Length: 260
Ligand SMILES: C[S@@+](CC[C@H](N)C(=O)[O-])C[C@H]1O[C@@H](n2cnc3c(N)ncnc32)[C@H](O)[C@@H]1O
Figure 1 (cartoon, protein in one colour):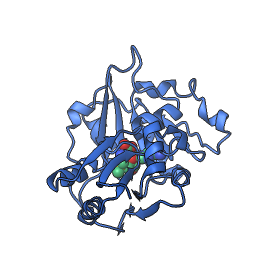
Figure 2 (tube, rainbow, N blue to C red):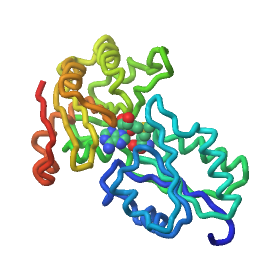
Figure 3 (cartoon, rainbow, N blue to C red):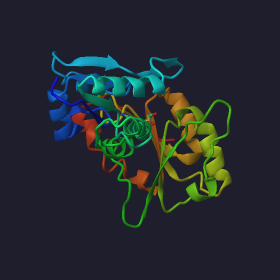
Figure 4 (cartoon, rainbow, N blue to C red):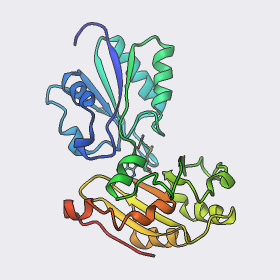
């Protein structure tokens, strides 16, 4: 323990430990406690020195280890006790990671904190799948959305805005509702022939990449039996993936290809 406590909200990136930032690595080495999420890969946790206390705040779907309120309260308590705390989150803490909620709680309790960005799944999984998020002539922008919804509620997304053939659409947590996502995008005018990809365990040795079309996306991911975490990428840029596939061969991974 070293003086006044502080919480570092640190992005761990999508899985490959070499995608940790230099700052994240240093903080993991120097902190007293790491409070980590379910999506933080084992290879990253291996970098935490044996003397550092690890607390699993991981939340599996339907099996809540700690509530969000309990996690925030724990961070406040640890900092007030004088600990240097790394709150380690998958990807980037401020992209669909609830890092901002935790930061607000820390601010409300006047606990010192810093935010250390990480590589978000959209950037990491796409790059390792050979998909550039933008490419001149194919996509002039990117939209990041969540396909998660509260129990039973319809997905609350602006479908006419998302059905844009000139932009790349990246959907986090979309696996459970992929059928509805496809139906809505097609209903709002996006061609079913639009290239689409689903990437499971992006950047990890077991990464799986399904390349297909929007119209075939739901059937392809179900047939492949993809399991979370999966990122969906929809847009013309996906057409470059076969040409830019640097990772599958390089890692000699058991990556799977489907061309729907
Ligand atoms: C709760 S969100 C957290 C996002 C995280 N904060 C980020 O910036 O990447 C979890 C979702 O991120 C995506 N995701 C995270 N890691 C991934 C990975 N290694 N491969 C593919 N998708 C991933 C999946 O869509 C997953 O359901």
